Image (cartoon, rainbow, N blue to C red; front, side, top):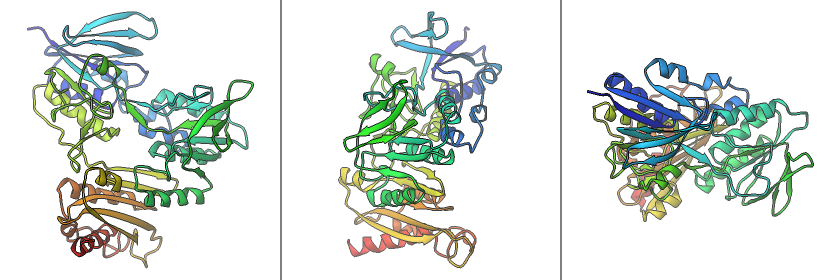
Length: 459
């Protein structure tokens, strides 16, 4: 009996996790696996690029978990610098173009995995493609940025457009590189993934680090000099001088191939799958990673959340199912952490605006505490905000902004959200305590007590 063929489009977290898992379950005689990747790298950590740019970690090799050669040695035919340009789902083949030679070829498949990732938002502005303007999505992007930073002179100026996760992490990297940094954000506060009152804490901390934060402001153009290179970023109010510009405007699902093939897409443009990560309505087509929408366990709706943690789990589920087993991906609660210099930022669950959009009635509680017992050396401050459903007391979301020891406390809230706990139940969680690690009442539990009281008071 001839081997079936699995074709994987995309050679990073979801795609290569799926390929690797399927290979562990089926031999090459049972399943041929061909993976196509436009870039030169496979199985890498894009999340590490800001820390490479900042000189904290080495790159790019240190950010690669498994090279194309290592995948090939394990029986996966990886084709780098090869772009899939078309899908024929009825005929069960893909059209792939070798980017070096320009030649195209059709490849049949029995199973197809779409792991095409996401693309950085790049608005159609004057000068946006000028030399010196950098996106931060692939290791090739990172290499270009690091080369630009290494070649800079004294009195260097950088502008970061966008103050989400990528933006604040790149602001830190540029500060570490000795740049004078300006961050421009269209929203009222940085970190639109937080409520505005918590985002204001991030802004105050960034300003205290010497970063200029410009909010409620749209970029109108990128200005270039006589040599064609970037020299400034323009807004309606003024121009901000820049030797380097980094785009941190977020990402969108890269689903152009899927759209052209008529596959189902959600509100954000991400592919829609069932819990087995099979594209809805297509028995032999699977999708995972940054190109899909996933179930939000708090709101019950699908959301696009581009994180490597989810992508690797998607790949494991897909590979198990293609390999003859059975697995599902139940959904997410929207947990994310980040940092800018020594400020830690975390969130999980719903923001106030999201809770209102879902028609939920809720209460909030915001408390200030410390990472350790107040009398213990180097206890650091943190602010915890908690949302709970009015009436039931069900936990809806948690946000944390603080110094060392703050961010990973959000994991307790992520577990509580997944378990659909009430804030009253949370107050009795048996968390670890010793003065070097926590006050007697952990900050998350203090916030839960405050939220439970607000629920009982009916506020």
